[in-house]
Length: 407
Image (cartoon, rainbow, N blue to C red):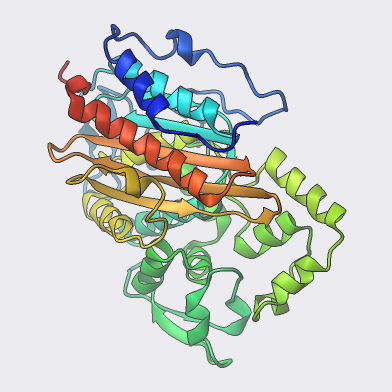
């Protein structure tokens, strides 16, 4: 089997060759017809826009091109017209490049790119559900800011974290929780820690404040994003313990207790639990659905204008994953994002992700998701894949083959 991508020149050669082709819709391009994975896979049906029925009293109506969207953050809640955005065909050069990168990678990977301005999408395994891991913190942040928009919360609200609230893995805030009295800080600070440092305890504290997993699922449903496209799991402690084959106990949050309990399990137990998680991830999401949501966020269709700017600015300050997609973004561009990293069971690594929005100096934006569900290759090869995707987008745009909504 191929180890990693090999030289990126092959993929870039495909990009250069395909750029001379006539643009046709990605769904009809020959290279778009890829054989389905041999193993059963969870899919979501809508390839571009996720639609799920919601109760009639839901505050937000379906966003349609050329239609209307109810804006609950506006005082009169009048319907606001949205401009009609024609969806052009996906650039065949990018179609060929993205699918070549996906096929060449030694592992199960999903890749999706959406032009925020033109609406086209390009993907490899874009409709399969991949483990999100900490990518799901993005939906917690949106749920929190939506509650702010609706007057239910303020970012200055105090939240106290006690030892009973600690989680596992990456939680730098735990060092501040040194007694039963706990550590009190603002919701704004917890949000910042969750999104820029991927602090698990900070994120779970935000999640608890907004009403738990059901509140996040309700928010997604009100934006017509169903569980067939983006799922939200049970919270960090339950998700990670179940993935490892353990039953959560709060003493696992202290020190390396979780690692010790996990290492004491028979390998067969861990393998069975990990296989079950990967086969039907409770936090699964389709790359196409993620880039669709990111594009809507960029266009102001997920939150109020002020909350949209707060979230985008916070994502741009993210400190995690500097060698993932970000390292392939061309100089002069901006990239704002959220990463995710799952558990390892040697030689397998799972849930190695990066999703975000890269914006060119001329203001053109592209939503990107690279989700490695499972692989045995090392971290440098994973970085190479992710960087190749952002370089391919940048090469296409800078080479004059950009597709804009004006065409």
